[in-house]
Image (cartoon, rainbow, N blue to C red):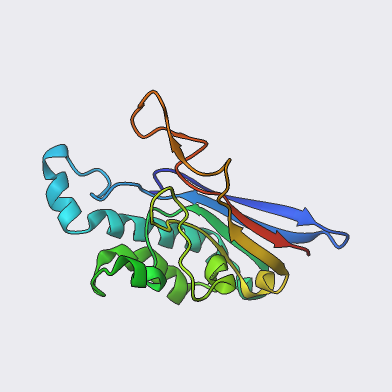
Length: 188
């Protein structure tokens, strides 16, 4: 099950009509596991079952997309979206125990797929939040072949993109969003 959705677009670009595979996703946002009854959610959250479910979502998404191609490392692939999980690479900021379930999604991506974390490839020593707070849960992952074609990347924060809480105090409603856009500049 992929509860919030994922999609795979094959786009032809450039004079040579090269295929760019774009995978978009939004993983399970809760700390408790998918389908857990209300009275069991706190226990589920304490066990990290939301993280375990997100990892299963990621395995399915990758299996059906980038891992379904034998030579994807040499193809142009980008996987992006709201992963609702943090990466071990950013743990100098979070200071979570090494054994936490919070890293399951990105540990899987980094060990089982050809994907590279786009932002960390450009800013290896920097933590750049992708939300209005101090979390990086939005990512673009790219294959090595696409990385060679990328000339720039950034998480955009300016007067327009800065998340602002809705003035009517509507619960969890932000302008323009509670997430910041990520930009990737490339030429195929």
